[in-house]
Amino acid sequence: MRFGLIGAGKIGMLRAKSILEHRDTQLVAILDTNADAARATAGSSGAAICSSLTAFLDVPMDAVIVSSPIQFHEEQCIAAFARGLHVLCEKPLTNSVASAQRVVDAALAAKRALGVGFNLRYYPAIAFMRDAIDAGQIGNLDHLRVFGGHDGLHNFAADWQYKAPVSGGGSMWDVGIHMSDLARYFLGEVTEVYGIVSEKVWALPGSEDNATVVMRNPAGIPAAYEATWTEWKGYQFYVEAYGDRGMVRGAYAPMQNVLITSSKPGAARSKQRRLYPEIMVREKLYSWKSTALLSFKEELNDFLGLCAGDTKRRIADGFAGLRSIEIAAAARQSTETREAVHLPALGRMPACAR
Ligand SMILES: NC(=O)c1ccc[n+]([C@@H]2O[C@H](COP(=O)([O-])OP(=O)(O)OC[C@H]3O[C@@H](n4cnc5c(N)ncnc54)[C@H](O)[C@@H]3O)[C@@H](O)[C@H]2O)c1
Image 1 (cartoon, rainbow, N blue to C red):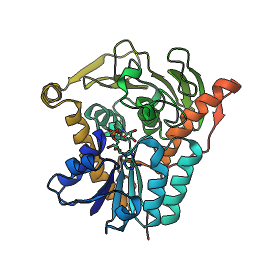
Image 2: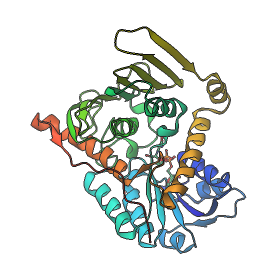
Image 3: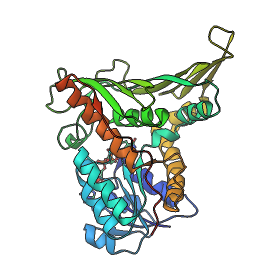
C-alpha cells in the first residue's frame, strides 16, 4: 500500500520509519511546511517532497498518515477522504467535538478507513491487560481506575500542543486523550460522563491542568479517570481493571504489569508481577522513541487490516477518536452544570467499502 505522510516532526519521523520497515507498505510522498524536516525524514526512500496539500495529494497513493499539528488535522483528513484515501490520524483527532464529527462524517461519506493514533493500546503493558481481561482472568469487570499525567508545561515544545482553543484543551487532550480512549477500550463504550476540571495552576483559559472524571458504560460499569499537568513524579500513566475474580494493572514508565487472580472474592490470591527489563535497557540506549516505534508498527499493521474491512483489530477507529474528544468536552461541560453528560453509544465504525 502506498502511503503519504503529512508532518515530518518528532512523531512523523517515527511514522515514516514504520512505513519504510513494513514489507507491505511504501512511503511515496511527504508534506511538511519545513522542507528540511521532510527531506531528513524521507532519507533515501525516494518519497516525493511536497510543499502544498494539493501537490501532495496529486501523488498517486492509497492512504495518508496525518502527523501535523492538531489545528491542521481536520482540513488534511477531509482533503484526503475527498481523494478517496484511507487516513490514519494522530491523536487528538482534532481540537473540538464539531471538528472531529466532520472528519468522521467525511470518512463515512467516502467509505474509507479512519484510524486514530491511540498507540498506547499496543504498549506491552496494555496489550497484557487486554489479553488477561479477554481470557476472563479477572472475572467480570467491576470498575476501572485510569490515570495519565506529567509535571507541566516544560514538557511541551510548542504552544499548539497545550494552548486552547488550538490544542483543544489541557491535560485531557495530551496524555489524557490516550487515557479516556483506554477507558472506553476496556469498558467497551462510554455513555455517561461526570467531571470537574480546573485551570488554577498553569492558568491557561480552556486548558485544564487537572481533571477528575467518572464515566460509565451502558451497563453502568464505571471508570474513575484523572488527567493532570501537576504530577510530582513526572510523566506516567496507568490503567487498573478490577473484576470479581481479581485485578490487572498496566503502567508506564517503566513498563510493568500486576495481575492478581482468585477463584472467588476472599479466596487465596495468586499474584504475578511483570517487569520488562528488555524495554528498560532498550529505552536507556534508544529512548522512549524505540517503544513508540514498535507500537506504531503494530498499529500500522492493524490499520492495513482496517483498510481491508477488518474492524475487529485493536486499532482505534474514528468513533474512538470522536468519543475521546466528547469525553473531554463533557467533563468540561459537567464542571459548569454539575450534572452528568449523556452520550449515545457509538460502537465501531462500519467496515469501509467502496
Ligand atoms: N501518539 C502519540 O503518543 C503522540 C505523541 C506526541 C505527539 N502526537 C501527535 O503527533 C502530531 C505531531 O506531533 P509532533 O510531536 O511530531 O510535532 P512536531 O512539532 O515535532 O512535528 C510537527 C511537524 O509538522 C510540520 N507542520 C507544521 N505545520 C504543518 C502543516 N500545515 N502541514 C504539514 N506539516 C506541518 C512541522 O514543520 C513539523 O515538522 C500531533 O498531532 C501530536 O498531537 C502523538
